[in-house]
Image 1 (spheres, one colour):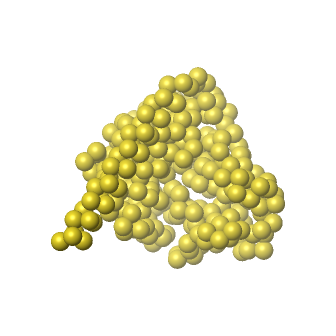
Image 2 (tube, rainbow, N blue to C red):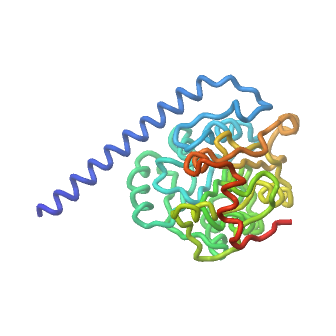
Image 3 (cartoon, rainbow, N blue to C red):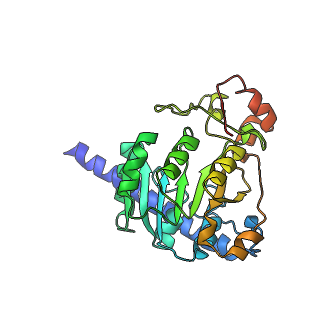
Length: 287
């Protein structure tokens, strides 16, 4: 009985801390968002951060408001507990529906516990995503063309995105993590491995994902337009131009590359020196 009561108390305290983080994120997003001076041609001016690690919340918020036929639906792969990701602002502040996909069962259960009462339209799904699982995501999704699709799994990102687009899904906005250690021009990805997990060891944690140029080539093949990377050098944003006003799309002048600030801070060297640490590892050229 004592163990049960202790577990219940700890769960309650954890829930309180999580709700505090949610309230702080909403306040931070509202404050930083209201201070922007927006230039529609410059995505760096769109940025603010509520739940996102960088400025993605602001970029996504602005782009979703300019979709001509929105369905207010998102999919995020690699959502963690949703306290820090790219679509929680949409789910909580703007009441979008969607799917959060996370590979760890305990984390997924906690996400569901926290957010079901805040937005019943959001589904938390435990799934380790492989190319073969993409069809399951397509079947589960309420829309084949969700307003937003975010992908951040620190590994097979390129191969999963390729499978998503090849399946016939057509997200209006697609946010993907790129690896700035590969630099602004190299067009490469790590090879596909169904069981790949990113190592947290020093140096090894730079071996993941793909370059921004590889992303540009993949999305161009499917008719998408590159918008920008955000200023902290983590994510690239692409849009389906058919879903937006043409004049707006043509006016965008985004940033084509930025160093990953977290990696720069950890390693104290630029992307060229970072690449030397993983240059002997197997890479696949993306044409």
